[in-house]
Length: 303
Image (tube, rainbow, N blue to C red; front, side, top):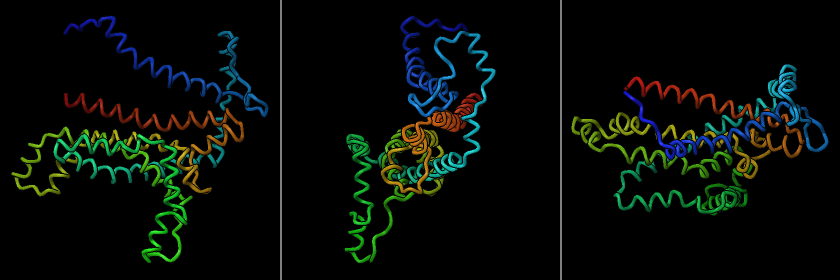
């Protein structure tokens, strides 16, 4: 089949997302990668550039041959970074699972509600985004602290005698992430459920399937793409989250976002922080690329 030539307008339209990625993702990442190969110094600017704009191609090649990747090797040897990565992945994983358990029933109820109610329900789900993210996280401080609303209510009802320790814990961070990122999980799942063919469920019910069997064999598998999209939208930003752990977490809540902030702004060790940031992006991108490759292979197999 002869391929159709694209017009100039179509080529420019297709180029826009690539230009966007190049300007706002690749260019900053290249700058961070360049800093990660530099040497740390105490004075400002807090690093000594290894590559200079005045370098010729011969200078750049000579410097590349002498690279030691000391900042990357330091990541392996420093247990602080390893613990921060593991803790961040664990907290993000637990938060993503909790968000899924909260969002799925909500999305299912929205998708099964009368069609005229759905715009209102979608608006209610997105309503928290109409206020400041910082204010919403601060609100949880008032709820979770020892003298906060939840502890006061439980003590007034006689359910507890002493305040529960909720604020400044890892659990508070998980609660904050679940609350803040819930719409990112909810809306993709709702889109997947809302687009399902109702005749498939009706056919399963006519063949004797129970409601639970219909959910497990029809509804849940057909919403897989929405679940995966929502999980990625929650998990990836949660791994590098800084504001929520800083405001709701305690001193024992170690996450890579706080470690990066300390290296950048407290220790002024930009090369080490840049190397940690590049490693974090690599950790997150690798499974994404593998999943996308597996998805494309499955589509090719299906034809």
